[in-house]
Each structure stands twice: as structure tokens, then as C-alpha cells.
Length: 394
Image (cartoon, rainbow, N blue to C red; front, side):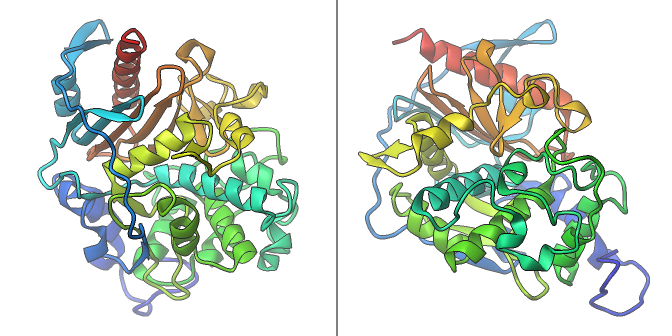
């Protein structure tokens, strides 16, 4: 099934075309597809520039263990149990551990990051606000995208999008065939304008009162950024982020098949694990990198969480696991975890940042399902153990 508003091949019965998203994400195919999305979808390059800045490397084995569900396990077991494809650990800006258990992965493999892309979109919004391209977080969506007048999003602000408190849209579930996120995916893959799908979302709660995880919210943020800057998401990310970080390799966003083609700001960035780690270093360093303040300090600190009760750890409700809070398009872990925070993507993608321990960890995976609370909880336990190990080796 594609969008209910448009079928690329007329009024035919559903076929394999409609199930492309399911096929791309199914094991064992996803070990290949998650590193070859540019073979499957239209793309736009996020250019890295000519002056790469190599990360220092002191790769060493990590013989530590983590405890989960009453058992002590090794990182090797983590990788096997959670289908790790890439695992990169930085401490104080240096790669101290790097392994690529995936069948098709290595240091130059560009990984499908899924919703870790959301956290990158937040960084770009913070830069655009600081530069004045976007006037204020209190601006309404319709100040930049007037085509959302008359929709459930009409009164929502950029700040509400950032914290996913718009009150628009249903519970984001991949298992319900006619859910908003499935219609969104099917339109991306099969044709049609995804803006039609987003504009059709209905209000389910008052704005600002509850958290509801929403790829639609981030998609609109990406469109606001493009309207405000006059650049595509890929072009702005290249100019204001990728080139400044001295990335090793061009990244790319894959685009919708239907026109107008558009990047998925909530899920289509692909980059090497090392370059994703550079984004983590930027956030671990309060927005400064290589002597330049790229993201405002206050924007980075907002991404570590705040004291609003409905965004606190354990208070997110049915669209967030109990060990997370949320803020600014990042998942937060609270004061007991040194205010560590992480970008997350379905099928097990992580950009984990513990500024207190000076640790950044990138874990890419090929889980058999989009979401898995137990795999996620086990991964967080392991990443915390790695961060705690380096916190004690100062």
C-alpha cells in the first residue's frame, strides 16, 4: 500500500512494490541494505570538503563486561546478541576501540542512521537559530511553511516540534498497517508527496502537554530549516557541519522516490561511524570542535534534558522506554547517568555521549525488528559500562 491519496501504478492490488520498506529492513538483507541505501533510493550528497581532519587512533581491546538481566556479559556477546555492525568508542577525542562485526561494514562504510538523523536535524536548527536564519523557537511552523495553515499543526511552534510535544499524530507504531508512519514509509518508497501524509495528521492532545514520539515533527523541522535558509538539508549540513568537522567521507541523505523529492530529516542520513562519532565529539565538547564554536553552548546543554516533568526519565509514556527522557530531539538518561544522552535509530543505531566521562560511542546494528525494548535496555547497560570504564581511567 502507498499513500491513500496517490498510487504510482493506478488502482491495483498491493504487490511487492508496496512492501519495499519491509524487505529493506528484514534480516539478513538489512546487513546489506543498511550500508547500500544509495543503491536503492535517490540521494543528495553531504559534501565533506577537501580538508579532512584525521581522528587520532589508539585502538585497543576492551575486556570489560556489563551486567544485564542477572548475567555478566562481554562486548563480544553484546555484538552477537544485538546484531552490531559497527562499534566505535572515542575517549578524549581519540578512537580507543573500533570494530566492524557486520558482514558489509568497515571504516568507510556509510551506515543508515535512521532516527539518529533527528538529532543531527536538531543541531542544524540550533545553528540556524544562532545565525538568525530562523527567528525564534517560538515561531510557528506556518511562518515558514504556510501550506500547513488549516492543518492540525497550524498553531504549533518550532519548540514544540523539537521536544515532540505538538500533540499531533497517533502513536508511532510500525506494526499497524494503516498507521501514520506506515503510510509515510509507503509513500516515500512508492511515490506521492509525503507532505500530504503529514498534513493529514490529526490532533490527539493539546500542544505542549505530553510527549509523543513523531517522525512527522522532525520532518517538518527539516522543511522549516530548508525554507528558512533557502538550502536543502544536505547542502546546509555540508556547509555548516560536515565541512567544519573535517569528516573523512561525504555523507548523504536518501530522498523520496516521488516528486517533489525531499530528504527525510527524521531518518535518511547515511554516514561512516567515524564521522558520526565526530558529531558526538561536537556535542560532548559543548558545541566546539577544532577551536571553533559550531553549535551554541546553550543548545547543546538543552539537548541533555531539563526539568519539565513530562520529558523526564521514566515519564514519556507509551512512546518512550522507561529508562529515557527526551529533549531537543535527543534521548536523555538523567543525572544518575551523568546526564548522558543519545541519538537513537530503529534497528539499533546509537550515538551515545557522556560528556562527564569524555566518551562518545557509535553503535550501528541490524536488528530483526524496528524496536526492541530488551535489546535497547541491554545496549544502554553495555554503553554505560564502557563509559564508566573510561571515567575511572582518568
